[in-house]
Each structure stands twice: as structure tokens, then as C-alpha cells.
Length: 458
Image 1 (cartoon, rainbow, N blue to C red):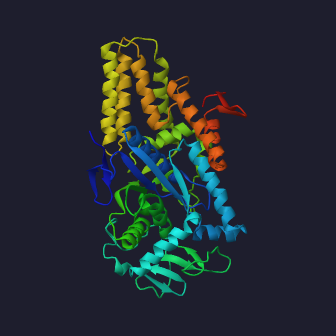
Image 2: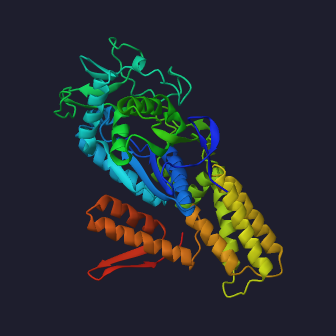
């Protein structure tokens, strides 16, 4: 059975067919690093971490790219409030973000691309838009002319702003040709970071950073673009307009996938109301496996509620699976019927996951298998252990002491950390150490290499 995904671009669930056979180029909008990452970020990035894992488990070579917005109005405002240079604000919260992702077990991203490292690509893309008649200059910078791109709105099905949209970066200038025209390049202002370029002194707008980064790594068109649903308009709509106008090639992305929003304790999360839960606060409230399981027990497109009840349900669910795993006798020789039950369960789980990554449906199959197996006189054996380990390779939510999967996963993370340290990517290496520490893994670095052992279990 082939994988099917719900494509926001067509509003249809379609067979997933990447442009290159057996290879997926995947981009998900990363954070703007002006403050601590929150549990809404955790939901989106945990669910896309799972999607990347499942695509890989299905035989695809996945390149997962994520941007880091480190040049932005929000960072500049935070800088002014705290009297700290913008680059220091960005570096601090980027480091925290990477640590938070590692603490959640989200280590599948291949490349984190910072906006400030791609200024030349941003300028080049804007110059092409100017040459093609899609941009115009005002006294405060360069703007995209929506009237020059009649297809604007094809992703979201609209062209107007609504109260629920991410409007914090709407660019106000009474001289704009169209109300929705957005800034491509912002002219230099006192006290703000700027670059000397062919466009003049200034810095990029928000939307152009993403398309310059994806074009650098993937070209003008690629397979899968993801993000939270509140980014569809205007951010993702602007990305489509920019890239397709600059290149003359469509689509920017063949498939668009969007995660549902998160409500915390009955209310939409909002800094202005104080209803704002950081990832670190959430991990002080519960363990990372429970939080991760809470997100993956919901369909990625569904909005969800996060509260004490949700977390308690997730904790109880994953512990039922862990308790079953502890009853498995790996030395038992499975009967054909026992082995077939596990094989059939895995096949049915895969069928659910092939249908737009239906994680709650897959977990329901697993719980039904456990109920049936517990009623059998024959004990669960190696086939059951393989099933649980295969599931845990995808979900990463179960603590199964002594399992081959557990040790292999730690080995892989230790190797990845060693590779990052050799490449002098110390923040990302530290993030993996933090993740392993959360799992009770102790690391010891020596000239002979890195040793590890488990001190405790969570």
C-alpha cells in the first residue's frame, strides 16, 4: 500500500509521489529565535519528526531541512527591550531551541539553516523578482506586488487577512500598491542589523528568508513543505508567490502538510494572556516520553488540548505498552500463531500510518494486539519484542530497559554527538547530551572515544 497524505494545496488526500524516486526533500518552517520555544512548537516538530521517521522506514531517503529565523522584527524588539545585541538574543534562543528538541527526542532534522547565513541568496532572489516585474521600491525598502501574481491565494483559498492569522509581521506603508503587499527587503534603520547589498543597506523580510534557503538546498521545487496551520496565510502563501514568481516554475512544493493548533488548559496559547507554556516548563511538569506520546496519540492535523488529564492519559497509555514489554520472554520459541499475531498487527499498523500518518489509528491496533496477546495462554515471545521495538523506533515514547532498540538508539545518538563535536557544532552536540541525560544515560568522553551507561530510568 502506498503512502497517502492530505495536501493543503489541493484539499485532497493524495498518493505520495516525490519528484525523485525513493528520495524525499522535506522542509518545515523553523522557529523565530527571540524567546523560549513553547509547547505548540513541540507538537508541530514532534509530529514532523515522526513523519520523517516513517518516510525513512518506508524506504525513502529523507533530507529534512529546517530554517532558523535569526533576523526578524521580533528579535529586534526583544533586543531593544533587554539592551542586548540582536545576534546575542538569536544565538541564546537558538541554542535553547536545539536543546529542547533533543530533550523531546526530535533529532531527525538534517540541516538547520540560519537566515543570516543566506543573505546573498536572499538578495539574488529579490533581484530576480525585480527583473521579472514582481517587486517595487518604496522609501523603506522593496515590496512584493501581489497584483503581479494572479495565483496568490491558491494555497489558502483566500487573499485577505483574518484575526486568527499570524499578522505580527504585516508591513505597514500607506504607499503600498496593494494592502497585502509584503516586504522583501527592509531599508536600514538606526539600531537595527543591516547588510550592504545591491539592494541598498538593510535586511530581509520574513517570508523571503525561507524561500531563499529552500532554493539553496532543494532548488525552486521540492517534495514536502510543513508547518503549523496558522502559517498557511499569509506566510506560506507569500512563499508560494515569491518562489514561483522568481523561478517561473511551479509548484514550490508538491505537498503541503499542516499541523493543528494546541490549546493549553482550555485556552488558545497566548503570551498576551499569560497562557503560555514553554517546552522546559512542560518537561518540568512531565517526562519527555509522556509529552511526546501525548502529541503522537493525536492525528497531526487535529487541534488538541494539553492539560493534566491529557498528560495523565498519555502516561498511562505508554506505561501499558511498557508493562506488556516487560512480560515478553525473548527466549520463548513462538508458535506460528503467536508470530502471525505480531506480524499481522505490524502490517495493520503500517496500513493506518500509510493513510496520512494516522498515529492514533496505529496505536489503537497496537493496544488491541496487546489485549489479545494477554488473553493467550502462550506467553509473548521474540515476535512481540520485535513489534514493540519497531513501534518504538518510530514513536520513541517507550522506556524498555535492556531492549536491543534502546541500546542501538543510544549508540546512534552517541555516534551522532561525536560527529557533531568533530564538526565543531557544539550546541547541537550539547543538545544530544541533554537528551541522553534525560533518558538516564551517562556519557564519559576520553581520548579513546565516548563510553556510556544507564544510571537510572525515567
